[in-house]
Length: 358
Length: 127
Image (tube, rainbow over all chains, first blue to last red; front, side, top):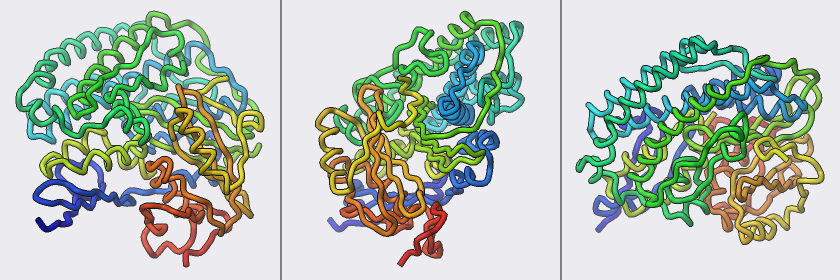
């Protein structure tokens, strides 16, 4: 059978963002996949040379809308380590609350997009309907639905009072109930399973060797989550990573679905233990030295390498996002799969191309 | 030591020679380390490349100083996933990696019309 070269993307109904793959197929079976990036490369890292280290918080929040507060948290955490700043306990717990809200809305967004990828449009709308409740919480607590700009070097700039906290917890009860109602559809439905079970298997060994991150890594049976390092207030919360073992599209879906409930639990714990006190301390001085800062985004581990020189502009800001790490595993998964499964496989790494290209 | 925000010092980061890169990375892989990524920074006459490796959430960094215009070996033979970040560093800083299995020729993100390495203060012109 002759081989055919097929361009996939950058514009494709299943892709919310532009990614191009050159697929070599033989009898509808993918033999090779070569990526092409660069459609949304903005060179944001370079802005560190002309925007001072406090202005850069607004820039990194725009690396990716879905993970905005986590980008800022990772950046601030790095600058705080360089400047020797210890943030107040209340700020640490509030950072957890916003981070977990982000995880929930990202996973609900992904579950909807994933349902849409295999043509289950009513399920897509159900997940997005639930997600709107989280967006309302984010808007009420931060003033924005998507770009949750709450972090600053030394703490957070917004508080959540007791009455708002009660409202958040009440809303989370509804979110939990409504998400549970969709559990049997996403996990037991014959159609969903026929498109996901046994598709795009990434073995434990391959996932580790290829540097996979986040649910893509944990769905292959590896217990690794940056929250285990205990950043923000995670060291004071009861937490263990959600892990699946099969490494296929179904396992990655189940992993993300269960992480929604884990996020709800973490927010409840954070509010139960939320200490009173200051929101931020004044950070004195300027960053000097090199630091590697890591946090767990919804899509996986993000790494910031920051190099300061004692001046207000950083020498270097480097961001390694989880989708960047998950592209090599995706290229390993694609050969051998049916052409019809390519969109499903691509979506199971939860690709964020604007993150990847910065 | 906080592994979520690790300040790089001489005590916790080894500086290695360019010809020792592959052997050092292979040693770490044999010890069970995972390749996280590589970072790079312009130092004027040279480019500093930092290899970030992780095992059980413990981060290990290796530094290599690469004079501008010089070549260093690609570690894609040890960790195949490194090809993507090596292509990025090649495009942004002009560091040439010897043995890259998939070489985008400095055009991973940018088009052919971008002739200089955009992340260097003193750039290297693409030939």
